[in-house]
Image (tube, rainbow, N blue to C red):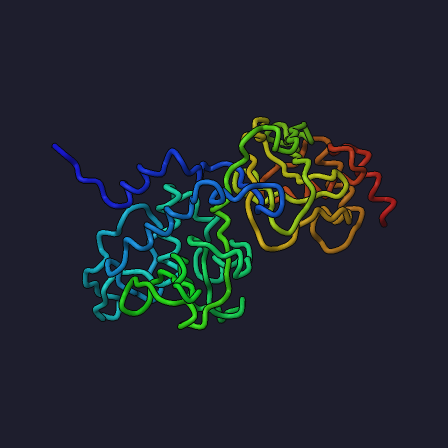
Length: 336
């Protein structure tokens, strides 16, 4: 029996071999740095724009409405009853619409952390661009980058007079409007628009070495030989790595020696979190003899390693040789 494809399926089938938009692998930096914006060659933003436009009149507006899944919600457009007994029609709000479009364009819900939920989070997951850089598929926000960031739309094109056309979800449902009519002139490019590294040569060196022993076995130090920056961070298994000036690399600890394959690059808008080698390993707020005792216990494999105490273990390498030994405990005596 012939199965009719949805518009989303048809669009994705048409473009899937041309647009490596999301592969669950490290993301590239913006075009003015070291990478290439994939739309510069193959117009990858078409997918987002078409998916957005296809929903005109098909999704109702609902304040706080979210649906972080692929495909259409079976409840959209149908009356629902909330806990107060009030009747409402299920749908999406403006940021929920943007998230849903980008998730479906990416083809995986794993793209959600790169997209963000809510207008403020979505703005932080983007790179600010100028009006001259703006192109269909980018986002346009209202507000001033604070809590007043209250609306977002997907740029779909430009009018003959230069005004920006955007597809957005507002009271009345998904529609296309002039961004200027809503006082929206803050332009951003989503992190999800940046392609993966194309060749292994573009990846920095990633090393995995034994760092210490623990009650549960060996603990490994993962280092990414990349400089800190304000536009990207590195993660291991989705958890942000810390930058160590001592190592000159991003670092994390794990009990798995195959961790190099699970390191990814993600976009961000803030600075780097760094390892502070202040000797306060036990988190008491002061550097004292108890810190030396804990470092010594770690060096003897008598401590239990958990992800939540990874930063403390990283701080314990006071001499910076990439492992924890009794020599690190001795370094405490020079600090107190």
